[in-house]
Length: 636
Image 1 (cartoon, rainbow, N blue to C red):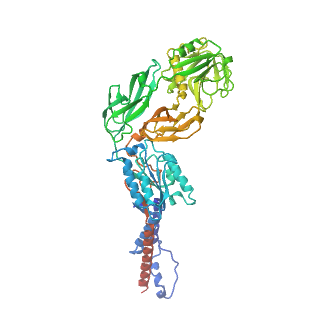
Image 2: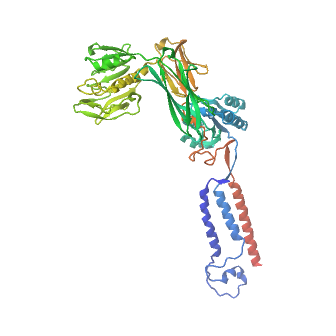
Image 3: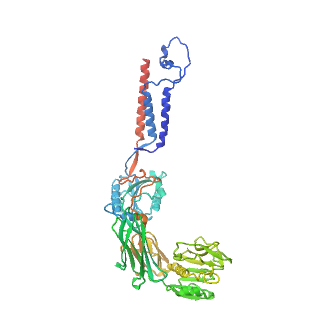
């Protein structure tokens, strides 16, 4: 038993006052009377003339104290925890995130959760209604609207399957609150709709869950797991004909683990297995190098862990090996920029065309535009590099700065700055610029950013606020190898938008954009999921967003029956790979004590203050009877 209003126990301070009243004796005035026969009731009070008297033996005092204890206990709202039934309306939310596929219970956690859900449905009252939800993104998470048909509710639960994504708890519970608001009632949510949440993650609940009468059912045990949490495929800039494949592994075990990391291409091994020994809760990264080869173009490279644990979804990751990109670059300049021409023409990914500013009439079929001290009006669509835009940009006012400046900082983590050091860059003249809100500085001086980039409305831009290829102005072009690497990585960042599918390597649950040429001529767009299921997309737009990346593996995009390309989705989610049980926090109205996870049916509070009220009434009657019996005895 526990108390819902424990602050009421402060009222126990009245007990000393009741005891004190039994010590007190009233002062009386003296009067002379012929006889006291008619004053028998006052005889006891006449025996002393002091304010305190010796406490006499009487049942009244313990009865009054007991009465006060019972009343205070009733005001404190005593309640018993007991298995509760479902209300008239209830919403059953079942976690279907990736961790629910763990087999630490002998079978997937989701199967155990579904069995518990079916038992809850069987407890539904004759007039009760229930809605079934999972933890995917609304409105797709509604599996069954409110109904009292147990057959439909059973079918909705049986059809649930694990989605290889993290749970979308905030939008799910926001939608629960929204359903309560549209119910038309003016009573609080906890009085109208009960919420039951079955999950192996009972700690990361959003704030909106605190407004509901939430009952929680745990599913899962402590389980050790090893997971791939990072995976990427890049091309080295020097030399430009190698792939680098990074595999990041993390241990969620309490003991050291030894296993092998395997890498294969389309199921065939081209690498020796790497043996890894991970300390408890440790992490490590393995880098594989692969020579460029035309037979690998468009094929799938897969990393896998040779280990048996409770969750297999995070033991592998895949990516697509693309051929070297080939970007059509238009350089618009009235100067002979020899250093820039050398860098661009020696880059095997670049097809360069240079024209005068007077000959510029639009983007054409070029992928990247480079404007040297020239800003066209209006700005064209496409991805652009601005070199020393002395007249400023529509979104960036500038002014000349003729004083020499030095670099004070550079962006340490952006992919454009990888393996680049420009701390020793010297600039004799530059532009003082005011960055737009979407601008990201890459190289900063004391007064202004020297190099920055940004993306707005699907257009990428890189701005050099100085002349990088005039050796009389800066030593940028003489920075070997930083200058060639930076320019190559700038083009790679800009040229990524030329791929019809981007990004082509995502975490499950993340959207993918598909660029369609001549959308008016497209009759059908099909995305084939890793399990072979087709998803048809209907659109007349040039950009199609595909968000149903709930399966781990490789997706294939078909346009009018012809393959457009492939992309891969991997779990790469440490939160889902951590299979240790998560406890509820104190600020969520779970109806259970902090630190305890209900493993079966939800409990409810059954208040018993009514019994305390009946007992207090009985004590009051007994006290009245004893008091009057005592008076009758004294009178006789």
